[in-house]
Image (tube, rainbow, N blue to C red):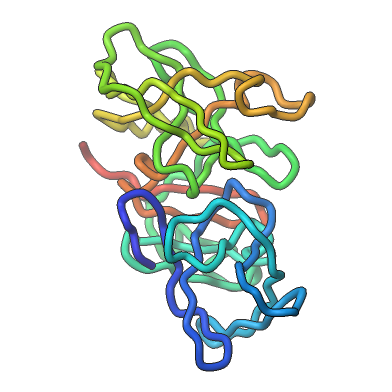
Length: 242
């Protein structure tokens, strides 16, 4: 795993004599690789396993040959320790009882499911609670603005079709809180995020409501080790003192 500062790359995909790097994007349902070959899909070796990934196109950082989405992790759980990504079968002891391996500092977050996508309970600003999509493909989060947040300027956001949306960039002046199923509250300080989101801007489907437009992105996720059980829809973080 390589954290470039704006994205997470999974390294070591092999096909023939070629090596590939793939963007990890849980905001995407499907995985794909970019190529000019005549095949609809290709087999890749990674971590001692062989996986089939279809050929497609998308908006990718320069030099990145493909993307792994939610379908890639179906039937598994993962643990990202902020350096390496560990991948386990859904029936492995680690997936079934992660607390036995990660200890009491593992906090399973309160979530809800919308199709294949997971939304985590958060509070920001103070006394405003909602749910946000967990998206490893988003470098910054999309959050409601607090009263005293610091304005950092404007940022360009690239949308499907290569169109660009200008959004306001902020730093939080109070803690962002993720809420665990147990009621435990994990605070994040000095979070950078974007505002200016609307259903119209992102062309969200009609069954998505406003709260499901919020996003917890990589800027927040990279600050804690992350457990994700894709079969049981469980997401957990390792508690760290601020």
